[in-house]
Length: 312
Image (cartoon, helix red, strand yellow):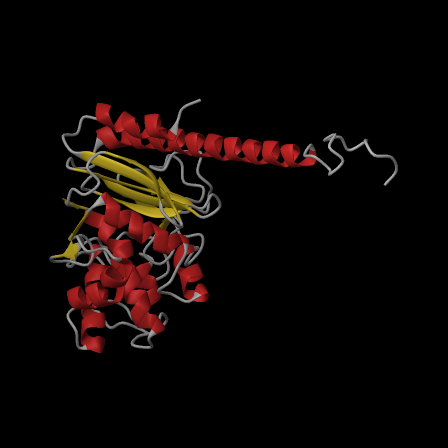
């Protein structure tokens, strides 16, 4: 049986100069390893953080999930919801071929740049300031900064990402219905490509968050529940949340995602899940022992026996 600490310490053997990881429940960090206060780029892990800022604007009535968003020569009907869920037909970057919305899951940085501009226009505030005021400051993510695109240019720490993960486990910024929309499938049954992992059918996403679903292979491994959601970044970063277990994990590294990560992340996450489940089983056993001890406690007749003292 591996302990949580020993599983996390496995990152010491990764071919990475700087790497840190932590795991949390909805209340507090359970364990961590490495320099969790090191500020590193998170790359596309920027998207779920930026998406939360967009959803706060939706909640405030500044924009609406199903309102059309005019985008140059793009076909009509592209909505805020489409863009958050990579279903707007926009290519990765501005200037590529544009498809019809709601037909395929096409991963798009451009869509998030459009959303950042829309929020800034509607609020009269730069998106970077909106993000700080509405998300980073309330969550205590003091070391997290956005300098550039809301699709890919946040720098953060594992400590701050765990704060963000706790918000996803126990939301305080979004009403329940909007949080549910963000963390469940938007536009079901769309096929698409998960960067680095190839075509997936279906390729399920929520609003800013990738859903594990039935994807195989997958960077989260095989042990996490299908309802698990999160994101990874080209910078070698990941964050996942398993709502059925009530736990989340975050990792940052200073080596870009490539084969080293594909080889290590799934097994690492499976080991982490096994250690968490073992710890839960041990806690349940301890609780059972405590209950048994209570049953055997002195009943007031000095014998400590349920059968002593005659009829009841």
